Length: 292
Image 1 (cartoon, rainbow, N blue to C red):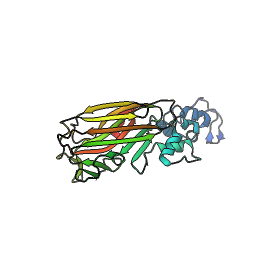
Image 2: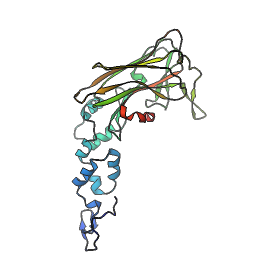
Image 3: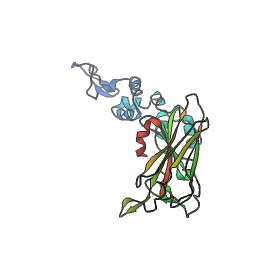
Image 4: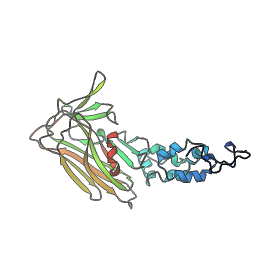
């Protein structure tokens, strides 16, 4: 496929078209009606649509057709926009709406971020440590917020040492129908820089290999999951699975979920842990988590 594509090979007189001088017996891609091009683009993913829009004027014009982007938007995109912006902006074309949603958008005083995956159009969500309820977070003997460029939120919560470790959170959001997975993004070790290089200080890491941490997830319609695991990997950000939940196709309002991470065995202290965020991700896209 390219500008050299033609349906007929015949040297004949040329004429002028709205796209410049063309041989009428040797039509190219630029001669296709925009409505026809738009029907083709509708079957491509958003990245491919934007790529093909650079071919010529016909493809560029067709790439703005509302029905092309309607199928790429989440079914509840109006509710999602209202949740993020506090209202629905009028007179926006569907491509403008998709462009906005495909960016990482902050809301709820910057403690949450939401975006649409550019390949699958699935909804993704992140909740910062500052958007969670952390026992003892205001006591600087135990917890502190550390600025770092290793987080989407530019800071993480760091626990130096504590007996009772408990983190809770919840969110009420208009998730489109589908199956979602909830993860805690954690790192054993304190992020730092030395001579301009990123390093991880693990001197204060202790207690996480004695008793397991429990992760739990609840939804308002009765779904529940629970898992336990030891935290053993130091120096790297890891996603710990709290559970999955399903949003049915018949649901047209917000879905409320609650989640927690606890280690409340007070027979020993634990510390040296960084808590970045909680990630809600489409279960079909879990392999892309490392990009977050």
